[in-house]
Image (tube, rainbow, N blue to C red; front, side):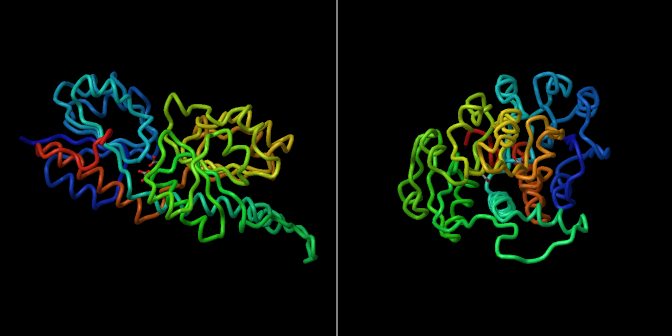
Length: 321
Ligand code: GLV
Ligand code: GLV
């Protein structure tokens, strides 16, 4: 049986080699996300689809693919872009890429936190604008992290990797989430489990590491932002819609929180224009997992999920496992 494998956007060669070892691979070569009708056309006849975070994979896409479709391998840990129920009803396996991107994403979250608290973006903009400046005692003062409290929303693999870094910077850790983590993990990280409300009340920095679900959409809304200290900052490397971006822009504008660093956006790739006018905001274009090593590992894991399912051996990282 010659499998047809459709990859919606170019991925590293190592992953393509893995896929080519079991079937005929069609890579969509456009350098932008496919529009819905293009995606429907591209997947026709596929036994496997390798999808990206920007592809909306729903019942219509799998129906367009046809009844032979066996697996959708999303090249991301998040899978809010996949209608998992619709695929489960049709017995199509769905997989993601957990684990391999935790360090890269945690590095980015911590880098964003430092950018914000040490005003690195502002400093860069100052020099690039060729504005004259001179060192003085109160020039561009930021805030230190040592002794401050980091509130981690979602202490999964990424959240833990962030907490680990925060400990090295002398921070205290609180966390919240659907479940309490293993007591050994709590002890190793010195992490205290608290309610979301308590976390927002106490944290000097809040870092979001939860998946986007109906329960977490706009988790950080007007009310949540109101609870945060006026000296606190928000870091989002999870998914844009976890934060109500308009409420955030308002809170930042009136300085009811001190700053925000965002890797993801509610209406990605669009960034709310109000945010771009604020100096207490750091924005980067969804770079959480964007290292050569990590993207290769993600794509190879997705490819192995495809080859595992097609070979009847099952996926390495099925969703729900
Ligand atoms: C990227 O955003 C991911 O979920 O891996
Ligand atoms: C990250 O890789 C996660 O699964 O949380």
